[in-house]
Image 1: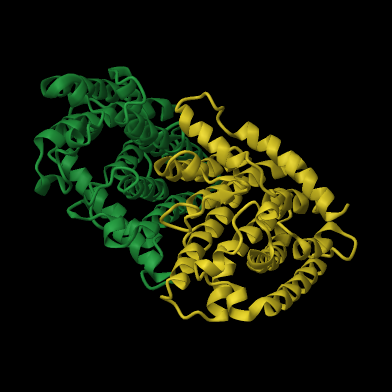
Image 2 (image 1 turned 45 degrees about the horizontal axis):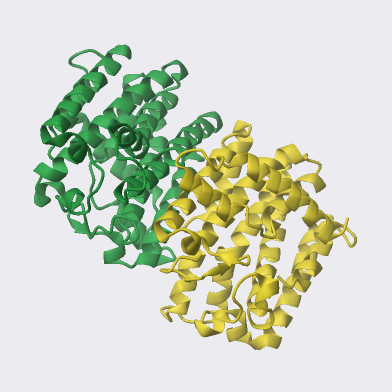
Length: 292
Length: 292
C-alpha cells in the first residue's frame, strides 16, 4: 500500500478513536470539553498515530493493539501545539487554517486544555493491558518530557533568543528532542503494541530519522510553502529570527540535508527488513515531497 | 504518632525522593531543569505525598511501595500551582514566600516547567511494578484531568467571571474537582501501593472529605491569615472577587462548614477502622487548626 493510502486509512481510524476517547462536548465543564474537541478534531495529518498503527500492523500486531498508544500520541502532539501557539511562546494565530485555541477561546483555557490533553493521554494508556500500559507510558513520558519534546521547545526558545551558540549541532540536538523524540516514540510504541520487544530499538531509530527528516522539511516549507496549503502562516521563522536549518545551511543546503535524512530513514527501514515497495521504506520519499 | 510528627516525617522522606526523581540542575536544558527544581524544592507542606505514605503504611504497606505515587502526586500538585499562578490565570507573584516561577524565570519557562512536571509524574509511576503502575496512572490521570483538577480550575475561573450561577452547590462541585480529587487520589493510591484493593473506595472517600475540609480552611485563611505565615498574599480572593465559601457563607458559616467536614472526615476514618488516637483520625483536627 502506498504511503498516502495508509496515511488516509490511519487518519480515519485514529479520528474515530479520538472521538471515543474525548469527553462529550456537553459534559461539564462544557467549555473545557468543547475547547479540547476544537483543538483535537480540527484536522491535522495524524502522522504520528498513523505511524504507530503502521508499525504495529507491519510487525504482526492488530489495530486494536495500536489504538491506545496512537490516541495517546496524538493527544500529546496536540497539547504541545496548543501550548506552543500561546502568546508567551510562538504567539501563533493560525493553525490548520483556523484560529489557534487561545484566539478562539482565551489564554487560560488554552493552558488548561493543553494540561487536560496531556493528562488524558496517560489515562488512555492506562486503559491498556498492564505491561503494555506501563511500557507505553515510560516511552511516551521520556519522549515528551524535559529531556525530550519539552526540552526541545526550551532549546528552540533559547536559540531564538540567542542565549545558546547557534551551531548546526545545537540545532540538530533541538530537532532531535522537539520533533524526532515523538516520532521515535511512535515507532517504538508500534513495536510494543505488536508485542515485538526485540524490534523496539530499531523501530525507535527509524522513527528518529524520519522525525528529523520531517523537521528539515518543515523548516524548508516555512520558506517555500504557501498559507493555504500549509494551514499556518509561512515566513514566520525568518520574521521571528527562529533557529532553522534554512538559517544555518541556506535553502539548497536544507534540501540536501533533508535528502540525506531521507536516505538514512530508508536505511533504517532496511535494518527492520522493510525494503523498497513497503510502506515503511517508501515513507521517507513521501515526507520529503510533502507540501503541508 | 501525632499528625504534625508524621507530616514532618513524610516531608523529609518525600523531599529526598523528589531530589532523586528530578534531573540534576546542570543536565541540559539546564535552565529548564533549574526551573523545575525551583518549583519543586522550594518548600511546601507535602501533605498529599505524606498522605500516600501514611495510608500505605497504616494499611500494612512499605515506604518503598509508597514512593512512586507520592512523588508523582507532588509533581502534579506542583505543576498545577505553577500554571495557576500564571498571568493568564490567577496572576500570583508570591508562592511559599518566594517569587512565583514566571516571575523568577519567565512565562514561557513556567508553562513548559508545568508541562515537564506533569509528564515526569507519569514517568515516575511507570517505573513501578506493572499492575500497580497502571492502577496509579489511572487514578492520578482521572483525578488530575478535565473531569477532576483541571476541570475544577476551569469552573473556578468561570465562577470568578460570573459565567456560572454562583451557588453553594456550584462552589462545592468546584472544590471537589479542584482540590478534593487529588486528596482522594492520594489516599486511594496509598491503598493501591499497599496492595489493599478492597480498601480503595473507602480510602478515596476519606481523602475526598479531607480535601474539601482543606479547601474550606484555605478559603477561611485567605481572610484571616497573614502573608508571613501563609507564604502567599492573603486577601486576594476578595480583591479578585473569587468564588469562595466565605463569599457564599460568611466567615462564621465557613468555619461551621469546615467543622462539619472535619466531622465527616473522622467518620470516614472510622469506616476504615481508624478510631480516635490514630493519625488518620486525628488528621482532620490538624487540618482544621492549620494556619498555613
